[in-house]
Length: 140
Image (cartoon, rainbow, N blue to C red; front, side, top):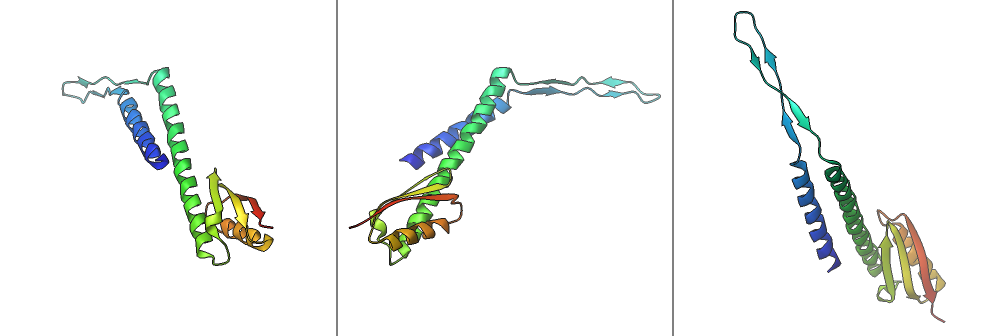
């Protein structure tokens, strides 16, 4: 559901940027006066977008960046979960993985401190992970 909203938001942002880009109007002036010919003059005017349009374009760019970050965090979460599932020593179904701005948080339970440390080490090896916050508790 979250990914669907992200795609819709990204599409809306792209559409808004396209419409705002069309707000710019350009006219060009060129003077051609060759000896023995008639002269031709063309006028050039560039109209910059209004401050409101500029602000909207900036907000659109920021929204695209945020949507991209959300998609990147979701991909990292999926990769970490896959690595944990592939490790036979770790009970991945007991571990919740969350990612925000490349920082992975592991929460849930582990059978031992060694397994909790191994889960953290596995998560660190995933591309895009900036840091791991290991909040795993060890079963008594």
